[in-house]
Amino acid sequence: MVPLRLSVNRVLGRLWAQPDREDVFMHSGSELAVTIPFKRPIKPIYITQFLALLDDIGAE
Image 1 (cartoon, rainbow, N blue to C red):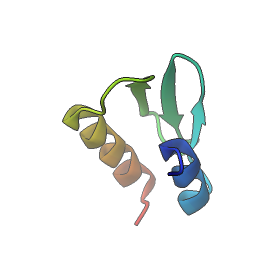
Image 2 (image 1 turned 45 degrees about the horizontal axis):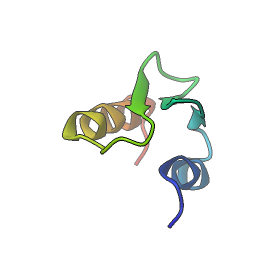
Image 3 (image 1 turned 60 degrees about the horizontal axis):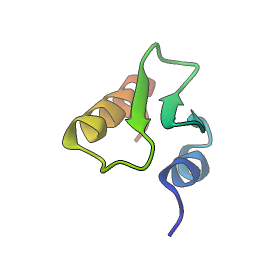
Image 4 (image 1 turned 90 degrees about the vertical axis):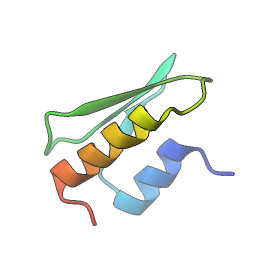
C-alpha cells in the first residue's frame, strides 16, 4: 500500500506534505492547509478538509 502523501504527490504532482507527528497538506495556489494526525484513524472531517483543498486548487 502506498502512503497517502505519496499517492497525492504522484497523482497531482503539486500537493506536498511535511512529515512529522502529523501530515500537513498544502499547495502554493491555496491558503488552506489540511493537518492529519500521524498514526491515528482518518476521520471524516479530514477527508472533507482535503476535498476542500483539492476544490480550492481546481484539481479534477
